Image (cartoon, rainbow, N blue to C red):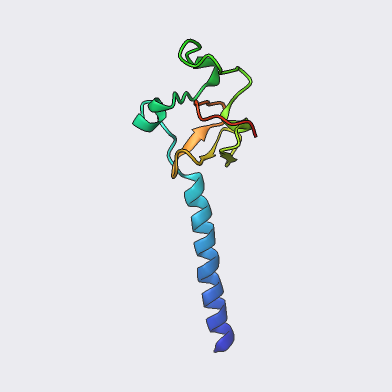
Length: 99
């Protein structure tokens, strides 16, 4: 009986961990029109950043090489600025910090 109880508990915990991992990957992408994103000049494509508005922006800067970025896939990842949402790895915002 004890081994069956242990199996059930471990199975439930394992499924919970798998489910939480899938939830991270299923997070919505940040929209450029999101008020917070717009306030810091987020663009999903670093080549589309307004050079006049952000003169310190360099073409080599993108979310993938920012210290605030946590890679989830080759195309997207999490950002400490946008909790619960993902940003494009090719994106950029004025909060960019060299990793």
